[in-house]
Length: 101
Image (cartoon, rainbow, N blue to C red; front, side, top):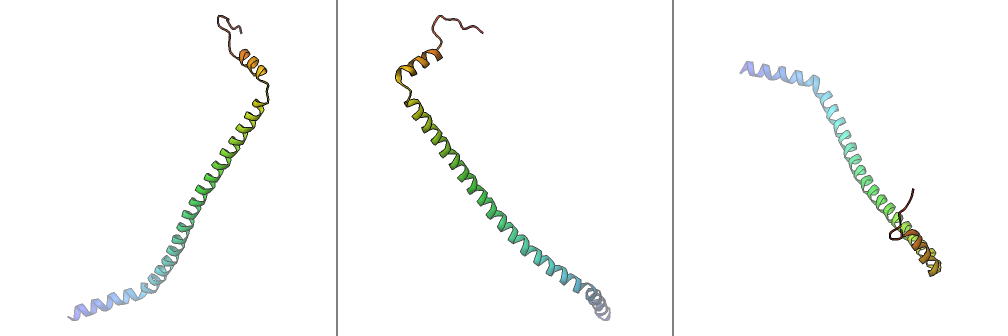
């Protein structure tokens, strides 16, 4: 038993040297983990915000396209029907006619 007690004392003496550094290290790791957890939550929040901003951006683009579409419809509706027919006829190649470059 004397030998076991001596080994125990040697082990405790060795741990006494490293224990303060180990405790300090564990405390530092705990602080870092808290910071990491906070940053991960913030990152998730930012990802959601980017999704929301992209959604808003798409909605704005869709609204802009709808507005442009409506403006074009209004413009076309102001062209007299006979002029529209003439333009359409010019755009449609006549049957039997060969287009030249």
